[in-house]
Length: 125
Image 1 (cartoon, rainbow, N blue to C red):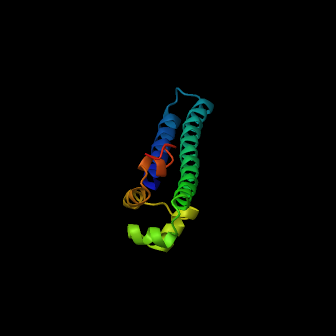
Image 2 (image 1 turned 90 degrees about the horizontal axis):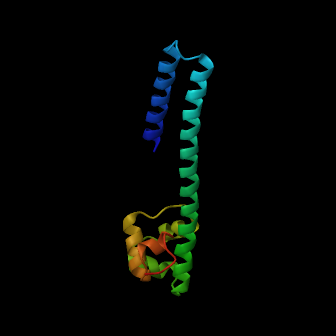
């Protein structure tokens, strides 16, 4: 993500230089055009960040709830999946995000779909 942000900022900077050099465009209009573009990019990035944070929280809650619904302790899940119990705990409190392999192992352990674990569906299968 950092690379994409740097590239986008570089593009905006070059666009600002181009508009600044174009004498047919009033300075105020050029500034307004550049700021509108930056504002749109900022809103996109902020929206992505907020959505990601919310999904991380939702997935953590879902992981904990499904484990408890199955009557399993973290240690039991760790043994069944090969995940470290500390790692599993980190997933359940939202400190860490499970990678795809961890999600697959957890879905198999709990007998649910990946969509259910990632809160894309409320149907377990």
